[in-house]
Image 1 (cartoon, helix red, strand yellow):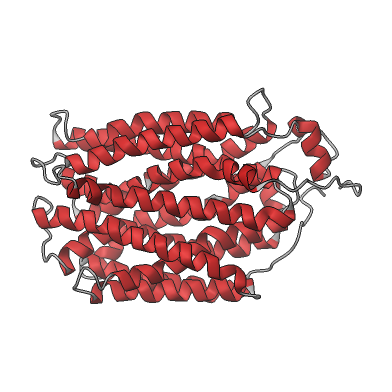
Image 2 (cartoon, one colour; image 1 turned 90 degrees about the vertical axis):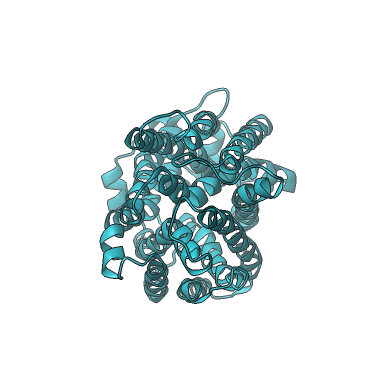
Length: 443
C-alpha cells in the first residue's frame, strides 16, 4: 500500500445525487418484480407449494452476474468509463424484458408454455437488474471520499426506497385511475402490465441521466487516490484467493445476511397469499379479492419503504452500529410475526412499518461495515462476491419453500412467522460481527 495516498476531493451534493440517481429507476423495476412475481405466477396457475421455486432464478442470476460485472468493470476503461457501460447495457435489457414479462399470459400460450416464457423473462429481468444495480454501489466506492461516504450511501438509500415506493404503488394507482385490475383466467391484469411499461420508461430515462452526468476517474488517477501500486487493468482477481484473504467482517456479516435475506424471500413469496387469506378470506387466484389483495400488497410494501426511509434517518444517530443493526432486525422480526394476526387491511401498516426498520438496516449496515474493511483494491470484485451473502440464502430458502410450507400446515400466513423467527436469529448473530478499517487484501 502506498503511504502517500492522494486524498479524494469533496464532491458537491449535486454530483453525489447524480451518481446514484439512476438507482431510482432500477429500484422501480426491482420493486415491481418483488411485489408482483408471486401474483403473476399464481395468476398463470402456479400451486402455492411451487411459488417459492420461481424465486430461485433472481438470486441465482445475481450470484452469477454480480461477481462477473464486478471483476470485469474493475479492469474496464473506455471513453464511457468503468462502471457506466455495464449499468447502461443492464438497464437496456431490463427495459425490453419489463415489456415482455407481464404479457406471459396474453399470447394465447398453454399454461406450461406461459410459465416457461414467464420464467425465462424473469431470468433475463433479474440478470439485467443485477447488472444495472451493482455499478451504482461501485461508483460510490470509486469516487467518494471516506468523509462523504455516509452521505452518498444515504442518498442511494433514499433513492432506493423512493423508487420502491413508486414501483409498489403503481398497480394500486392504475386501478384507482380506472384501468382494469381483473382479467381472463391465466392473463395478467392491465393494471400490472401498465405498471411494468411505465416502470421501464422511467428506468431508461434515469439511467440515461446518470450516464450523461457522471464522469468516472481515469485508471491512473484512481490508482493514486486508492494507493494502488499497479494499474487497475493488471490486477489479477482470483475469486477463491480473494475470498481466502477477505476481511473477517466479510464473513461475519455474511452469517447475519443469511437469515435476513431468507426471511425477506419468504415475505416476497407469501405476502400475497397471506393477505388474500387473512383479510379478503380467499385463496382463489381467479377471484377479485385475490387481485385486490395483490394491489394492497403493493401498498403494504410502500408502507415498508416509508418505514425504511424514516428509520434510515434515525440509524446514524446510534453511536453503536452493531446495536442499531441488531435492534432493527428484532423490530422487523416482531413485524413479520404480527402480520398473520392482523385481519384488517389498515392495521397491517404497523407490522410493515416495523419490517421497514429491518430493511433500512439491511440496505445500509452490511455494505458500510464491509466497504470500511476493504482497501481500494478489487473493490468491484469484492462487492460482487459479497452479493453471494444476499443470493445464496434466497436460493436455499426458495428451494426449501415448498417443504417448509408443508411443515407449517400448508398455510401461507405461517410462513410470515417463519420469516420473523429467521430475522430474530439474524439479530442474535449480529454480536459476532468484527468491524475493521481497511484490512489489506494484497499480502
